[in-house]
Amino acid sequence: MDLDSVSQFSSLQALAKLLADPQEEDNEDNDLGSHSSTVSAVGPGNIGPAKKAEPTVTPDVKSGNSKDIWNTEEVPEGSEFDDIWDPREQPEYEILFKQQVGAEDIFLGMSRKDPSTACCEDMLIKIKLPDTRSSDITLDIQDKILDLRTPKKKLLLHLPHPVDSKNGKACFISEKETLEVTLRMKREFDFINFA
Image 1 (cartoon, rainbow, N blue to C red):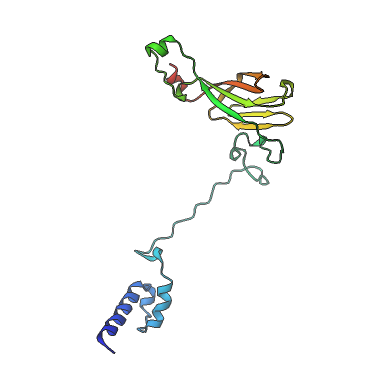
Image 2 (image 1 turned 120 degrees about the vertical axis):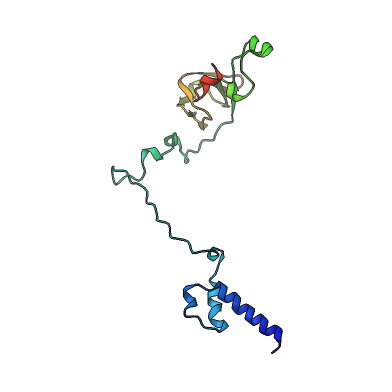
């Protein structure tokens, strides 16, 4: 046996000793076969000091009907309208934002309005409804949801901003076969933008 193979063997033994578990060091054998099983069980998580087991946290269960599958707070708003089995197709739609500006805003820049959507007061939703009469349209608007149904089309739209669901305007343009719904947005910081 030459000197290189002896040094390689001792290097392997030293490496195996470093990678061995501290509990196994007490009853350790000096042959390489006993270390091969411990070396194969070592992974990246074994590097460094042993970690303490963290206590598991159990979620708080609210009192109520034990037969309930979920809580009403867990259900997202508008999910009662979702009907994935409805075969009607979704119409094309476009969401635009409108702002009311005057001459002092455009020419003099006296207000703090800019072209961004943060300075817009209204949301305009254009929905294309070909081969539809205005009497066939059913429209329901809530704070964050627009629900439109016709005999051929169905649109459940989650709006990007909360709107005033009581005050809005809808106009069906029969020449373009388009329904235009104008809704006033009510966002949290509108009092800053429109002061």
